[in-house]
Length: 116
Length: 116
Image (tube, rainbow over all chains, first blue to last red):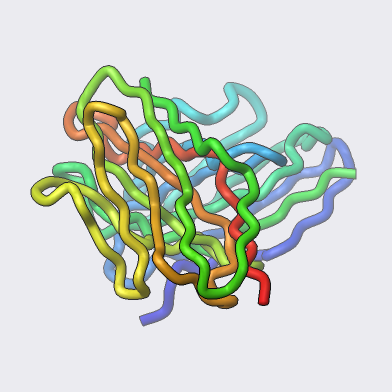
């Protein structure tokens, strides 16, 4: 059973460009979470999605950031008009359920975004 | 809201020595507790978690952690480390109840370096 897949693993963008980060959850998992790790910081929750639904986007910056998890295909985290402060590692996680709390989230290897 | 403090950003030890990685948390509600490990260029992997029951939890590779409610701590220990334990270790919490119990709050991580 393949783990959580993320691509690309490394992404370089110039200021003002768009970044698209992809995440394929583990087989059988319908819950996807995105976290961001800024330099010298711990991972911070950004958004929680189920198929075709955004459940909680309370950790997403209000502008330029969006996420989706379509019925078919991977989850996408999209950053428009990137700025240097967006440089970070972006991790995707998936779980089989979220009911009851304590559910193990399985993490992908991350996408390291560098904005020049 | 919760917060997690990992008191040591780096812990260097010699092979076969014991190690303790410290984690304290702050929360206004009851929490679940997790330790994740990140090997170089890989995603986070769950090492162990405390949900309920015995306050001492163990992983398959010799790590253990003890939940101490009065001290709000969840320190990670191993009696004898190997070179292969070199990695970054993250402590995390999530709420036990409420609408956001899927949301993990992470510490900044502790880099464990095991030297020969």
